[in-house]
Structures are given as structure tokens and as C-alpha cells.
Image 1 (cartoon, one colour):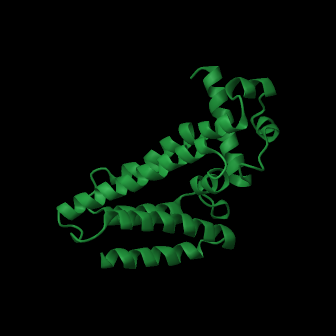
Image 2 (cartoon, one colour):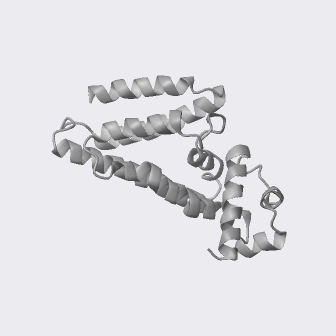
Image 3 (cartoon, helix red, strand yellow):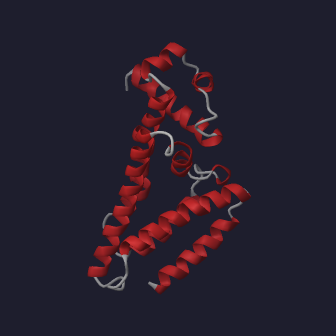
Length: 195
């Protein structure tokens, strides 16, 4: 990796950490520069504005990570409901990167930026659309194979899972406790058992 590319990646990673901890609106370019220990000129060489950097965080860090975490587990899966539950359990209980007190990075970005910046809205919508469609496709395939009841509405399940995940992340953030995650997982398991 060239030095310039390494500097850009360092800025994005450190900025992501600051934004995840403190929020996008309250994180200043000066804080990002201080944390990354690059010059102001170096920052503005890579990003004309803070919003350009924010979009790069979504497109260059979050989307690839999102694909690895939220999309790939469904490749070749026999029962997508098991895959969804396992993913939720991993994200809520086992994952050490996502902190209960800070919630979900994608949800945080959506709440802070979607109403104010159409480019953020488009990028974040692409994240959610991919995850939703991946779950829908996997559920439809499982219906065809007889692993899930034929009358199940795949979109309904996908929207339920996504909204539940983001909602419970916010509840966890408010309570600063994973205990609400356990309640969600229990309810999710009961729902999937009925499907």
C-alpha cells in the first residue's frame, strides 16, 4: 500500500472510531486531525469536506465490512432463519467491536445524517437494501426447498429482523446493558420457531 493510501485509510479508520463514539455532528475535523496526527493539508488533500470523508467511511469501510458480516453468512445456507439468528447473536453478544453504549454505526449514521444529506441517505439505503434483499432471497430459496413454510412472507421477516436489530441496539445504548439483547434474541427465536 502506498503511503498516500495508508494515510487515507488511517484517517478513515480513526474518524470512524471517533464518530462511532461521539457522533458525526459532534466530531470535528480538528479532532480527526489530532487523532490521526496528520496535517490539516494532508486531511484536505484526501477529503475536500467532512461530508466527503463521511461518505468515504460508508463506502470504503462500512460497505465492505457490512458485506462480510451481513451478506456472506447467507451464501449457501440451508436454513436462513438459523443464519439470521446466529448473526444476531454474534452481533449482539459476541462481537467485541460493536459496543453496547454506542449502538449500531449504520443506524447512528442514518439517524444523524439521513434527514440532512441526500448522499448519506443513498449510501445508507444501499446498505440496508443489500441486507434486506439477501435475507429475502435466502428465505425464498428455503421456502422452495421446504425448509420454511411456503406461506411465509420473506420481506416481512427481513423488515422485522432489521427493525428489531436497530431498535434493540438503541435500547441497549439507552440502558448501557446487553440484557435487553437477550430479551430480543429470545423473542426472535420464538418467532422463528413459529415460522
